[in-house]
Length: 504
Image 1: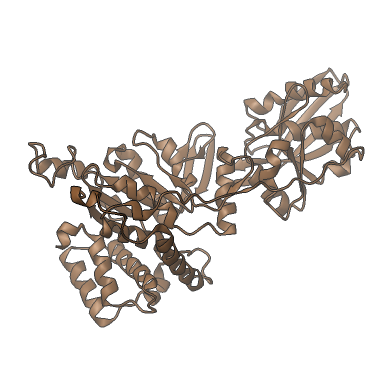
Image 2 (image 1 turned 90 degrees about the vertical axis):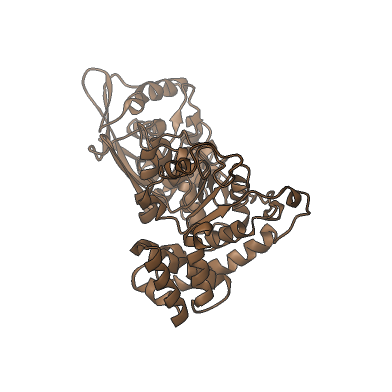
């Protein structure tokens, strides 16, 4: 008779249910695992056998066959140890078969029978809830998985605890969710001296989740401004927090099962590879664009990134998802992020200052910024020059609105957008608006339309650029509390579409 247990195989953030079948049949003693297992899964037979031996459970001198169904789905990872052990214990009549079939299990076994935490407990709990099953996992993964309210989570320390629980000897209590990590507000926007135009651009970008590029000389405050962006972003909604945490769970970034309401802020180094930014590797793991889902991807020294890495950003920016195609895997990850880039105006960095610029000016600047292709630059909604701050301004006290004040305005604008797009689940912010919805919510007044048409003709805006100006204008109107898009909103949006030196 075949005993069955259940586990999951991960395809991106999706956890697909896998049926673990165990049959003990007459024949030469053997322990085989079939169903497209990888090396880690194939090695489970030795870990399971030794763990059972440590519990004084001897395997019969028969042929033991484990089948992972569906057989054409790749199975990767050591988390199949626990479900294989459950199916084997059920086949040996040590655990009730009907009880084991109501559980989705994942966990790695040590040789002494203790359970080792594994990645992906949160998406596994979501999959278990959809199947109306409970989740069994190691104790170290329980706090993470327990965030899924619709699923009962049992977290065990050892395989012996699992046996005692399901045989009714020592029942285990359901796992409790981890702590909600506090939002870090230590960096305040008022600490930045000057740069009022850049601060305004950051506020607009945060309110509508618009992509922003800052260009300025070294030391003008680009990185300092970007580091304070998380302080003005609204906290993640519960649905967004769960969505983001599922990706972080697969990457092993959840700290002791805690979930944060703070939006991700990722800042990869410019030497990062394509697999690190987009995702990939042997097991097609999520990259920085997916780890920044619902948050910010800050790319400092933007032109210094490899050209092929920058070009791969174009499609994820538009679609909000990335498909990683490998010989043995085709995985899709969500990546709805806000791209914030910072760049020097040229290789030497001092293009605007003749006394400090190199001898190749202005060719130096043209060659340097040409590393950013036109199609990629066209995807930035806001472009702002960040001039150097005067020495006299550095001695002045903090000025401008604090992060808390700006965050309040951003939250109000996001609230307006949440109500506006309530009937359109694929649209969360103004940056997502398209089609008839975009035309309906961004129809400017006559003077505003005239400014937009003249700007589009003079600066030869693409269709994408034209629509992005409208989206930014809608966000500015939301910050202004205006129901309609008017001339000042269009004018300010156009001014941020082009470098300030061009607009002047």
